Length: 355
Image (cartoon, rainbow, N blue to C red; front, top):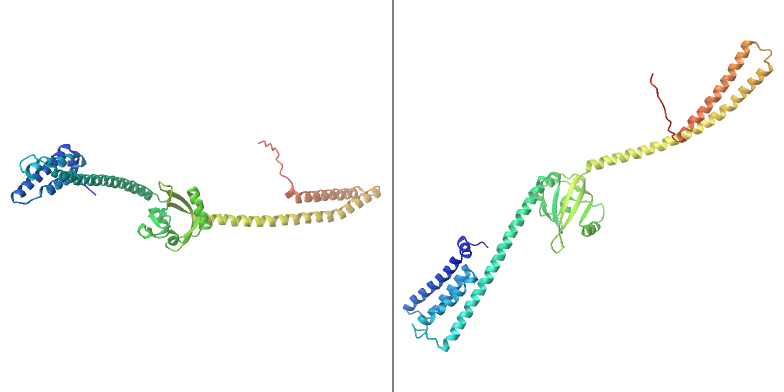
């Protein structure tokens, strides 16, 4: 509760505090004397108790002694028989004891009230400071375009920043107070109990989630959760940040599909290379037999008819033998080319000289 400016001034000034106590007793005395003139009896004690209450209520419990014991002097003089004397009988002592006891109770209640009020003021100030800090933090979070929202342990959204509004489409007034899983139609990759257990154990969780925008379009987000605990280490809130990775996931799927297609084609190419190698080996084997026959019979013909051949015929035979040899080299090269896919890569130094 807020205190008035006058009350604050009285509480801060000792002169005003004791002045208020003296004034309250003086007013009570004047009022009691005035009422006594008009034959009102037994009014002094209530007026003095009221003066004590006023003094300790506004001036503080440190000033209760002045209004508490000040009535002790005028009371026997003006209000206890025989009036205008200081004579006090033994029968009057219980009256004074009761008066002091009741006044002490008033003082104690006032002290408790002021302590409670002081605690409430301190709590209010602390709350205002915390609210200011939270407001500043919220404004800072609102400056970022990253989607951030906070939900309590019952999954109720308690904070929704501008980035979340831009990503999902709901304003903070529409989102706060609603269940996040129902609002965003979240689809989890693993059971929610396992995610909750990891969050409680490590105070954080990261993963990919499927969510739905206000336009009912599904998309994938990279989600990060942070658990907030109170002073007793009890979980009280979860801060969640999300980044849209739908386009990245689409590209990853495209790359994965391309890799699968490349692997398939690589397998097909390897199969074709094996077939080509087998074909080349078969062709080279089938070609070597007639080639050997041609070269062999040509050599025999050259040996048997060498004496009867003229120069042109001998040239023809030499051309046949050279062609057979070149054909053999071509077959060897064909076999070597068919095996090149299985050969290990060898690095060779090449020196190039510019002319």
